[in-house]
Amino acid sequence: MILIVTERCDPHTDFVEPEFDRRGVSWVRLHLSELPTLMQASYRLDGGWRAGTLTIRGRTIDLSRVRGVWYRRTERFFLPGLSATEEAVARVECQSFIEGLWGWLSDAHWVSTPGAIRAASSKAEQLLRARQMGFRVPKTLFSNEPERVRQFADAIEAEGARCIYKPHGSIIVDNGDGNRGVVYTRLLGPEERGRLDEIRLSPGIFQEYVEKRAELRVNVIGDRVFACMIDSQSKEATRVDWRAASWNDPGEILPHAPARLPPEVENFCRSFVHSYGLRFGAIDLIVTPSNDCVLLELNPNGQWAWVEQRTGLPMASALVDELCCKADRRSK
Image 1: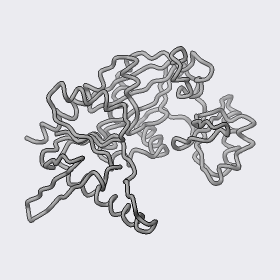
Image 2 (image 1 turned 45 degrees about the vertical axis):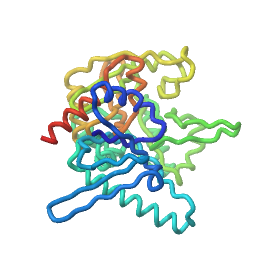
Image 3 (image 1 turned 180 degrees about the horizontal axis):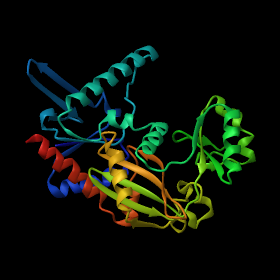
Image 4 (image 1 turned 180 degrees about the vertical axis):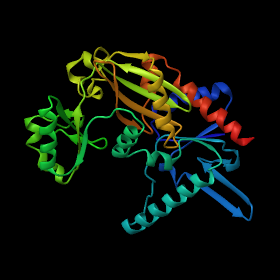
């Protein structure tokens, strides 16, 4: 039995669940928004013996049958009919309860554990770790001090380079016209310098802009490495941040192609992900005009389905291999 922890609408499961079915592997999806109204669990410890059950939408599962867990996405618990105080208490209790359930399933093979995902989520620590492992990273400042940012940008520009700003996480803003937009990486020009006081309350990441020939999205699944080359420089709007492409317009989608990494880069990507205890990681690299690779960041639970769609790289199959084969070995 494979347990899939995800959101209600997650396109990645549309790739993986049919592969489980094709192989005859039983699976069940767990949505945390169904706890505690549509999902219940009980787990018991009695001396050296333990047991537990998980009931999801009327289906009861023996926790001892869970051999693998694919931890994709979580949702807020649904706690209807409670006062604000009662909801606050219930939310804390539900969180502790579900974390206990994750611990109860520690014998299963996880891709990846919540603890490993949390440990790998700091962009600052990622860059420090990558540099310590001998990989090239951009000059970077994390700050909420406008004057230090100005000094950093001035020093970068004095060296003939440019400076960019990017947020720590995904920021969605109201554009004032009824539409919402995403804050992408952007060059630090006069307009952005004029707004630097805003970082006093919302710290930002400021970085040397590394000139690009292309970009790589590298997905590490277990011990396998899948690299995709993204031609971000083919369109003006995506030269700084490839995510700014018009994804709903087929004519604007950037060219994607499978890529072969130099052995030292492939080995670094695998080792970097594994150093956090992760069994999956999505890494963003820059390929410079001189064909050097520079690390931008690691997403310990990133998107990959669109890459398989555009390149045919068999990542869903690799993920099922990882979950099933490693889970079988652990159960023996």
